[in-house]
Amino acid sequence: MIINTGGRTDTVQYYTEWLLNRFAEGYVLSRNPLFPNKVARYELIPDKVDCVVFCSKNYAPILPRLHEITDRFHTYFHYTITAYGKDIEPGVPDIDKSIDTLIKLSALVGKQRVSWRYDPVLLTKDYTVKRHLETFERMASALAPYIDRCIFSFVEMYKKLEVNMPEIIPLSGQDIDTLAQGLGSIAEKYGIYIQTCGTNGDFTPYGIHASGCTTLDILGKANSIMFRNLKHKGMRQGCHCIESRDIGAYDTCMNGCKYCYANKNPHKAFENYQYHDKTSPLLLGAVKPDDTITQGAQKPFQAYAEQLRLQL
Image (cartoon, rainbow, N blue to C red; front, side, top):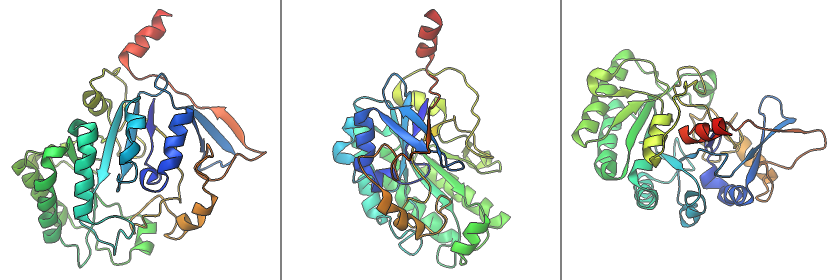
């Protein structure tokens, strides 16, 4: 199975010690967001976890102790660095600091395990098409030697976004085409493999690949391991990623990004943080008397693991 540490919250930036404790103790509990009294338990041991996938906007807090996980598990790292400033991403370090941290991360884990995420791409009166392309090129020139690929997506105009970010300007067809052409051209210039994820449209004429951001092919090549040929069900509509289990919780990320889908509102995460206990198996709070804990399914994806199972 694949463990996802950063789909629901920026675990690496705000809950580093909790995350390291969970891997040290060898298990984690995850509360079902739709049925809160249902809790799944996952064993965090190499025999049960094929790969640990990270996604964060600031790896600086975990870098000194990251080896506690990478020494034992196959890993892959998504690092989101965008053109936006504190007006849109208040809790995120500035671009230069983020680039510096990504370079340090790449030195620790190898460039083949690091993807640069430039998403979501959205427009305001300040963040124009021109500004995106200029900033993207500045980043690409600095990051090219240290990354496996670049992944981008265009923002989805869901209702919560319209409330949290009234200044957003809907992308026109021409905006999307100009951005895709520009991003593809810049990526080619610096030798960066670029792809979309969760974005509709064919941008292959611009050298942009359409693929899931977390596929068994990507994870396998990054870690020099062979996975079985399995269907990638995705995590939502338009997603082509392999199925994973997220151990985080919604409404807990304090980055405060205006476009965030994982928080109901910017203040909820700060309210919930008071319930965080770094020693608890749950990211928020503790197990309650009326909770039902079940062992989560942890089927192996690696080819050799399947062969061993059939031989037993």
